[in-house]
Length: 282
Ligand SMILES: C[S@@+](CC[C@H](N)C(=O)[O-])C[C@H]1O[C@@H](n2cnc3c(N)ncnc32)[C@H](O)[C@@H]1O
Image 1 (spheres, rainbow, N blue to C red):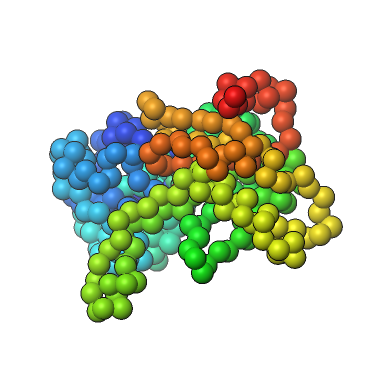
Image 2: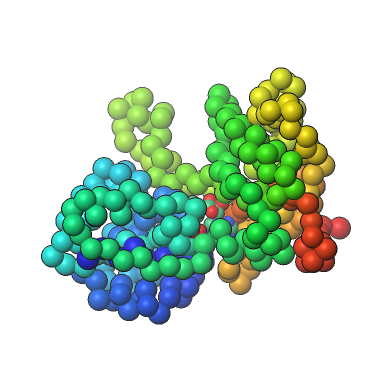
């Protein structure tokens, strides 16, 4: 059987009792290691293996995409656990693995856990008032996609908040080394709320005919660098940090260690306003 088990957002102990009992019974344990990481834990395999009392295999994107059959093979006559930080179906859905399991008549079970998709409610905004979630990619000097702007504007024009999930680069191949015929991996990088705000502000600075900023010119919206946003870091940990300020000010805020998310506010309900006072920067 294949178990897809959510680990929750931060610590080893965020796994559910049900999830932990299954992990302890499983013969093969894979930790999905590219869509999210357990704060302070994912790169400490020894700690993880000691906690589960089992050997854990790090499953990076390459492995999950190209060697999914290996995980499924392990689920045929024995039990395999595929551990996912957050919820296995939160934000990133691992439906491909599930569909492949169904194709091969392999039984599967999902053990849910908290996801950033619901834990974002800690900032005081009501989950019902969020529109489409967007992903913001880390720009390079030559690659600056801005399609997330259209979605934020569309949400904002309907008074809805936007949860922006921020890019994670784990086990990226170094282009420079590849050009020299070597396989070297870059150190992991995690986009910060400040970097995300800075990219959004840059979108406004780009030429006014940039489609991403104006989107459909018929849409009325009030999105600008003066719009309020909320930076969230390490949600669920003891040192969770939440700061609310204008986008242009978020550019200079340091929220500390990863992971970070950014929320662009829509219209506020009075209760949301009261909650946000707790986090509004002076
Ligand atoms: C693909 S999504 C998360 C998927 C995960 N399965 C879940 O359900 O939460 C990864 C992004 O979510 C955000 N994120 C995840 N955990 C977070 C946390 N504890 N605090 C702040 N942001 C977090 C970050 O922007 C991160 O890059």
